[in-house]
Image (cartoon, rainbow, N blue to C red; front, side):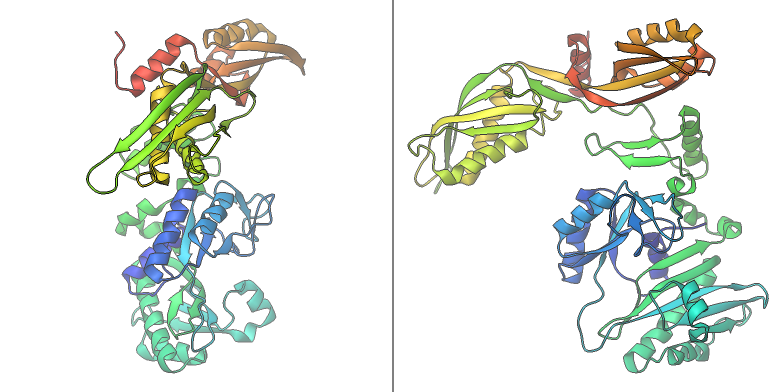
Length: 519
């Protein structure tokens, strides 16, 4: 059973093997937080972002359709977040994955270990596995670390060393010293390597692993020995002795048709696969093999909110609690955007005569922009809005940027309730290919799902029905389509646009979100 690099390092750490520190992330935001933790723990802005897939050659591999490699250095947490954003969800193609590549669902944000110091850093290669011909374990090592070991074996076989270890006696101290000597180490680095090899072999033996591979093993500039990359292959036949290792299995890696991701808007963990039966089997495995109690259900739809009317509003923020107070006064006009195709905030500054100092204007805009993340109906993001700052006033002592930002947020909450807010639902562009005799039933079913038929075509003796259908009505559709057509019809859909939801639908959604039960 293969496990990820970050999981392998956790196992190694338990046995005293020094490893490159880091934190795993599944989203851009988590990657920024992980880089911040690395900065705080290791006192460096620099970090390394590594794609986590079950394949070697990630450093030379590229994300499909880009020039981005699977291992990259970041100068700061924000850069680490940008790198992670481009990796996550992408397909990494390496020499071991083949042209198909593997999808990146996680990244490891790790410390930068190539820092300057008294000596030059040096990379080595080391692996531990069973030599079945000699019925002994063997430690394979070389000074040519950070390279493809097969390439080293082909071009410089004399540089590869082997140390056989009897399973009955285990690794002897003189063997660990021999390995450190053959790698040309001395002083502190020699002692560190002896301890590293001893701990690595103990981890290999006690976990009943099929293989440990560390590439590279790094001698840092201050003569520490650490594992920078780790590949561990656990023996499937011995997992009954290490039941905690079962938790390390990655179903998304084992089954390429199974995908898992976290919806950043709803916070739900979303699984997708080849069909509902496929997902039912996955959920059953989670419960039966992994002992995970799963609360399953339809994914939450990502609705949006919008406004349909303009409103003039004045907001005064005033706070006095002894000493310097807080004061801000703004007059705004909030309305739908002039261009219906645009999204986001359109901010217009119409202040004349310096009623509000220029340095406070960006804070007003920031307050409205941040507020748009949560609508007034049910907390969904507001799709588009125009805000015109018409007038206002300030206090020479009590006014500051934060006061105007808070004032804008208060104005947003109060004014939007009077701007006739509406709920927008995602509409999917649907295409169903069906035998002609089933077309009537399928069209009728789409109509029941509030679908709008956009056209019908012929294709290779079948009928093609094109329609726009709300996403909220499409859960369980594949099973229903199979029933209506005796398994002969197929469908596909993709996101099209957002449209205003009918009042009864909107009321139901808002009631559920706000915890109210309809009478």
